[in-house]
Length: 187
Image (cartoon, rainbow, N blue to C red; front, side, top):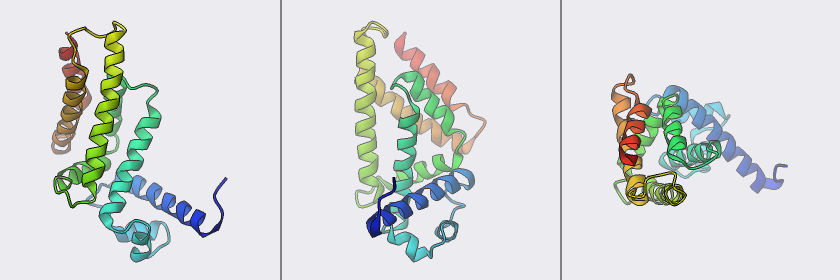
């Protein structure tokens, strides 16, 4: 049930904006999507749309958070195979990869709205992935020599680099290269 009152309506409107932005950016791309277009899609002025997020950059960070929530919800477990499947699905939404790559580069500046998001994303993602790899290793499903922290960090960094490469050459198979690296790590 939706929340009632002005606060609930604000939350509902924010969700509508995020849904429209996620869909539009996925289809058209980050660079080809304007705030004016997103505002029109949800029946608001540009200022009205940005009222819900504070700035264009904050909106785009919220879109990335929503994408992360969708990826986490789609995964039934946090395994290397599930991680590779996320990368494989990302190839179906080039606009979101484009957005992520631009926000990732901008996040190098600690003043940028994406800075804390990226730091938290890496910290939480690597901690969760490392925990799962450790459990798989301790259960005998992965080699005893595998360092879960190093493997999780390596796979996250590799996936991001492969996405950047894929933006330049969409015929490049990100998932296949990530899968090959994983197999090399567990040998």
